[in-house]
Image 1: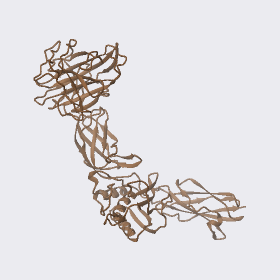
Image 2: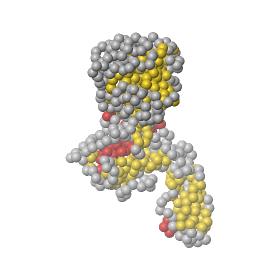
Image 3: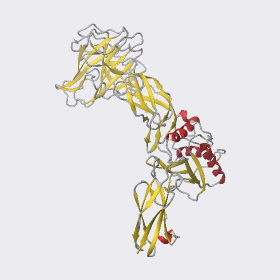
Image 4: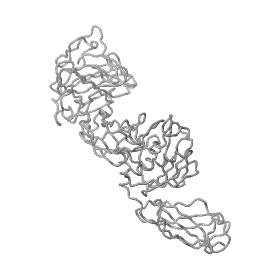
Length: 601
């Protein structure tokens, strides 16, 4: 057993014996210290001054099996290793005679390559012992925590951390270090027992690179051991490097050291926001397949965006990020017809021209989808009224330039309203104005159900989610066009023509009268239709206000079921006929209205 010293934590390992995670520190020389021979084996001597203080010799080292070999031999560890695995905090407040024991097997070249065993009472400053040299078998060490270097008696401490670290000096490499059968006991009770079997390194936090891993090549217990791995936990390729999000597309991440248990693959979403996790299709030690995701983050439609892709193993080892490009992102809904009409309320005539140019650009994209201008509207606010409208009004949420609000039913878009924020200056992008055409082109992409993209590699796209005064993007990129084409090539348009039937009804003046009718709409259909009810007498239509009919036209959200439509009857007694006409969202109208008798008493 070698010398002890004081080591601190640092954000990244920069030199030997730094444990990443807090303020930088290093082994602190103590005057007069000397190397201590390891009891039960050859002495450990290291060039240069001692970096610790003289310690009493520990308990004799027991030698175990030479190392049961099961799996393939790992590669030699790389140069300049500085890696740690830390467990804690562990509660020793009721402990007596706490002891840490473990088995270790080492094959190290001459130099400063060595294993460290350390403890801490704050999770930041660690002290401990250094073990160097080769072992021809597993060696057993038992260390008392009643007189730990620089920390003293750890019995009674409420929080104690233990750590195993390994560093190499870059002058040579070999198979490395294995640690197995770690035990922490106190008062005859086992507080920690880890044989690194099925649970791997669960519970151990990793610091530095490369990482500790679970090896089946050598183990004292015959199962596995913690191994200061070569830098094998790494991603070597992401194939393909470009995919769309939300369409079910998969990417394959290749590399080594991923482990058998599933970890995570996360994609960049937006600066300052969490990464978005991709659903895992399959996971092995060298190959992971996952889908490029969309989701909801902070109540917003989020998507994987162009930027870093991060794979993290089940043991918490994060591989170096790899760049990944998202071509477009699909919002998981579509219009049931390939045509949608819209109305506009603009404060200036030239804004209308800009809106219509944006619609024309999307119409020319090659997607099986068409925007139809249906005229103006006087509405100045949005509502769920099954009309698609573009308006200007104040927006309370800070930082919002414009937004599109879709209404979605069972995977179908049934309405979109779009708002431009009147708090901003609008124009053609000159003179510190927002360009109406640029912003409208982006928002109309949301009508098609394309999502925002926020990566640095997305900045040229129409669907890039940030805008500013003077920004001019009036042409679709290939990714934008691909998105619209993909959505409306994959979807099946509503081509069915609805049919409606009605039942006879009775009622009395001044009372609520209920009419019942049913709409059938053969597949493919979105199952959503709008019904208009009228009352007739003697071949003439009774005005709706005279009859007492509601102004709101009933919406049928489930075809194939009877719909109850009630109104406060204002009709004088007599015999009437009510008629129901129906139009579905694709614009298909029933060939004939449903007719049924209505008797008012």
